[in-house]
Length: 178
Image (cartoon, rainbow, N blue to C red; front, side, top):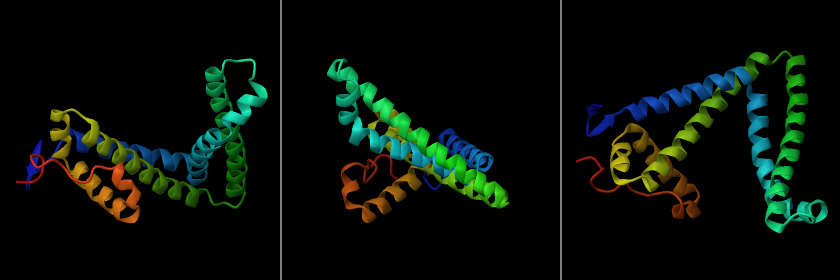
């Protein structure tokens, strides 16, 4: 750990940088179209599954126990929605290729990948600060990633007041800068 003004550059910070870079590289390889389509497919799949699981289970899975029908229905609705969105994404990708916009698509994909990597690290860091055991919270709390995540959480709380119940607002005093 390297000390700099009460904040430590730790292996955790290096890991965060590696994760963000990997997401950026994967975004460049896949391109914006696939990255956005995959992300939309996940979100729409989960949303559709939450809304339509009961209907799907009642119509097609009435011979299963209610608990199993709910699980199978959720997975089935999610997968069907996800596959449809990926099909649309494939068609959009073909249009991008025909328009000779692959380079723009790749660079935009790398930006989206970097943002996804930052988002993943943001959520993981805040989860460790909120739910980790005391030594882990102290270790993570002294990193640059924790400082940036806390600043991001405070900005998010100002933008979306309901997030105050989910995101930890402040670090324990023993973690803060002396």
